[in-house]
Length: 255
Image (cartoon, rainbow, N blue to C red; front, side):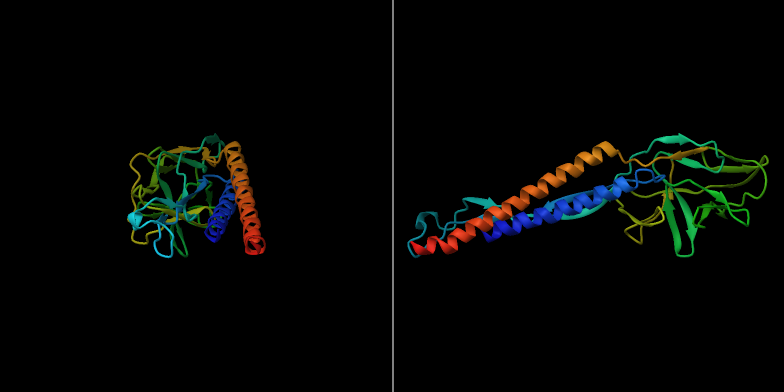
């Protein structure tokens, strides 16, 4: 019975974290380039049930023979990112850039090089292509200098200003097995600090567009209700086992 309390409690912990993940996704449904989070779970090691001998309990013929297993609960294993493509929306702004296909923009910040799908870019005071928080969009030879004039960005990232090529935006990708971590300001970094960025061979830039969040509000609400129902079910299991323990202590002992 005590084991049952632990199993139910572990389910409540997982469902609570699942609800927090869904709430975070819903809060970012309008965040440009946002990739929804998804939480996965794993089982604690199952316990083998083996008959006991001695003291009149069990049978010597069954000694050591497995007769089944009992679950020991669940735990959150990791929070991953759904890297599926978000819808593209036409903004008409030549400095708004959206990626089609897997890949990221590389951005130089005081803390190092970070990666993002948010192509809401601006021209900073020094005429460089930058993010809203001051990060510099990197090209193949450093930050992209756009200066004055009409900006044209081709699908492969080539940037022209007033008809003159000024650089090419650096588009990178990582091995599909690499886990990407969110670090704030819509930036991502690989969990493995030694992960090597590679050219995003199939990524295409769409000028005048932005990529929307890939969060589906309807699906997230369904997931939230499911997690809530599972949480309530685990809560009731704890109450039921508490009542059973109460009877075992206060009534069975009277027999």
